[in-house]
Structures are given as structure tokens and as C-alpha cells.
Length: 244
Image 1: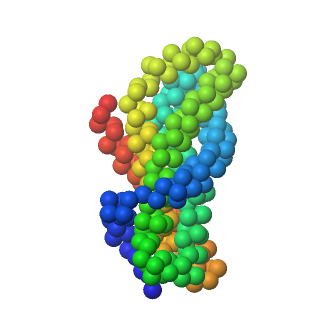
Image 2 (image 1 turned 60 degrees about the vertical axis):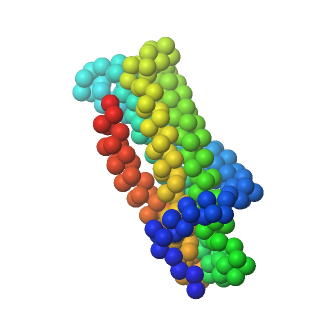
Image 3 (image 1 turned 60 degrees about the horizontal axis):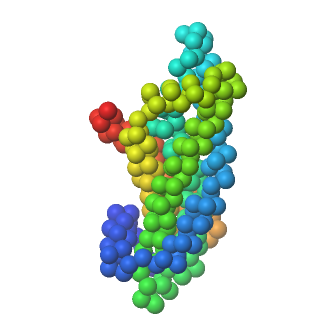
């Protein structure tokens, strides 16, 4: 029976990149499944997250400072550094992480993974690597899209809710946000999205027989990926704070 441990699985997957190459057909398929088909839900959710951030920040600043003129700048900084990319990653963990764990788990309990090995096909190169590379590419693209959508929504809410102009929002954005914030955000997005397929495939490979086993593997993958994203976000934020 095919059993894996997390660190050896990661190392074997990375090794297969150099020894066996990339399966481009599988890579393109997973980019479509993981990135393009997740775009709509990400756009909707990050838009509302940005709107809530602006409204809540304005309410509390008016209550405490009696002035919400700094809200656009602080909100833009929060969006680029944390909000957009973390919300995007947690949504992907729930959406595609569950799907990956269920798919790989079903293949494992139906002995398709063992069949791949009998055919001389490396399961890590066939199943894990394309999903990992697809998620890395999705992490870059979706991080930029999530940040753009969040900022546009924040600007719109600032105009219609706070009675501030687009020009004022852009000036505040340029004062509070620097280019390295965007680079750090993309790095976070890639890191978060790399965790999702690795954790999901790991639990898929360890899936127990039966529908209940697939359900447990799916639940564990989503919970573990979400926790990992939050912990890694703290670590990366602490590291990046030394570059300002």
C-alpha cells in the first residue's frame, strides 16, 4: 500500500521536477481548474472584504478621533499587505484544497495510485507537481487580481460612503503603500498557494477507505491548509517588517 510522509513527499516532488520534467498537459488543465474557475468567487469575496474594511475603519476613527481622513491610506496599506492575499488564499484552501484532497484520496482508495506505480509513473510527478506549479502560477496572478479588485472597491466605497475623491484616495495610497508592499504580497500569495496542494495531496495519499475516509481527508486538508496559511502569514509578515 502506498504510504507517504509530508517532508519526503515534498522532496520527492521537487526532485521529480528535475529528473522527470513537467507534464505540460496536466499543468494547463490544473491552471484552468485552480485559477480561472476560482476567479469569480475570489473577486466577489475580496470586494466585500474591502468594503467592510473601509466602512468599519471609518466608523471607529470617527468615534475615537472624530476624523476619518486617514482611512483610505490605512485601508490601502492593510489591503495590499494582508487582506487581499490572505482572503484569496483561505478561499482557495477551502475551494481547491478540498477538491484536490478528495480527488487524490479517491484515486488512492481505488488503487489508481498503486496502478500508476506499477506502470512506472511517479505519482508525485503525475499528481502533485502539476498541481503545485499550477497553484504557484495562480498565486501570482490571483494575488495581483485580488489586490486590484480590493483597491478599486476601497476607492469606490471611499467616494460614495466617505465623500472623498478618487484623487484623494490615490494620493493617500501613494503615501502609505510602496512597491515592496506589492512584491511582498505576491511572495505571500505564492507561498500560501504552494502550501495548499502539498497539504491536500498529503492527506489525499493518506486517505482511508470509504466515503467517510474521503470526507475526513478533505476536512483535514482544509483545516490544516488554513492553519498553515495563518501561521506562515505571521512568519512572513514578521520577516518583511525588517525590510521597512
